[in-house]
Length: 134
Image (cartoon, rainbow, N blue to C red; front, side):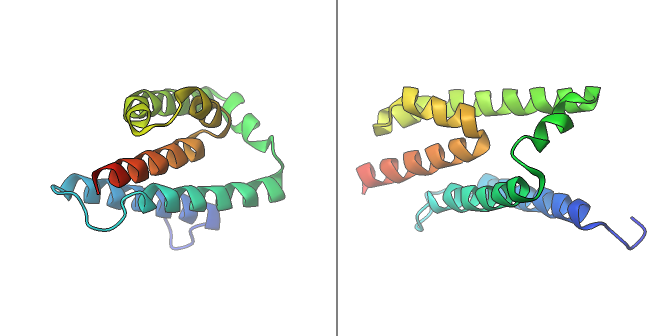
């Protein structure tokens, strides 16, 4: 890296590191945690929403589109994102329904906000599940 990492590359690397740590911690959790588990996706959503507001303020609400449509890699990343969010929604929706959420409402939030809507849905689902068992 040559010692001089641009700020956005550093932000990307830190995001990857945070995701790796979070996933490794989840794989090591064998028992139900005593702290409110819904806080993890809620905090992740707040961080993502903050970054999104910054991006919109600096670069505009549609600046992301050119990143996805101007190269084969951009299209590949776009499809990967769409498939990942769809798979996550598919896996979460039965738990969400069982906890009392209405999938039709949540699918609209996820369609229009992507991972942020999915994180809110996950936080709400985990919160309601915990509330039912406590």
